[in-house]
Amino acid sequence: MSAQNLLASSKAAGVGLLLARLPVGAVLALQGYRILRKTGAAEFMLDNLTLVQNYVPEGVARSYLTLFPYVSLILGLTLIFGVLTRPSGLLAAVLLCSLAYFRAGTAGFVNTNPVYPYQLLNGPTVYSLFAMIGFFAGPGKLSLDHFIFKRMHEKELKEVNAKYGSQAFGY
Image (cartoon, rainbow, N blue to C red; front, side):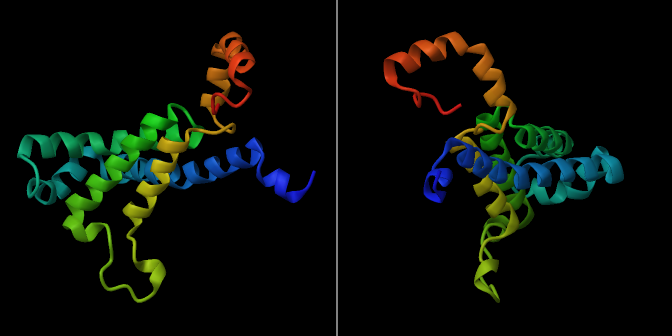
């Protein structure tokens, strides 16, 4: 098998999708864990309430900040393991974009005065783009989604593959 064929395989695509899911999943899971373990959800909410209240009503801000560490931890773990990858990727991107916006407004996305070109996009922007890869491209073969749905739909997949070809579904 040549290098070109190896890189065009579904295994290589699965590795690529895993490498897109891992950084954003790790950042979200570790952020949620750090808040819950060191700061506490209530203290985190009180520390950041004035920032978020600039953009949304107080009740919404309190709910958002109280749920943030739990949602962050859960979304991070689902992305790491590749469970419900598409909805998790979309929700992670929304969570990261809202965090960037509440922290710094529109300046939370792009650094307008970068010293080096790689500093143009801020962290939440980069990680939300990684999360969107999970949303648009799906989980790949190195995910629990692949194993769960493959077993659940093995008979249906055989019928669809016989009719439409073996690459009808991406999992």
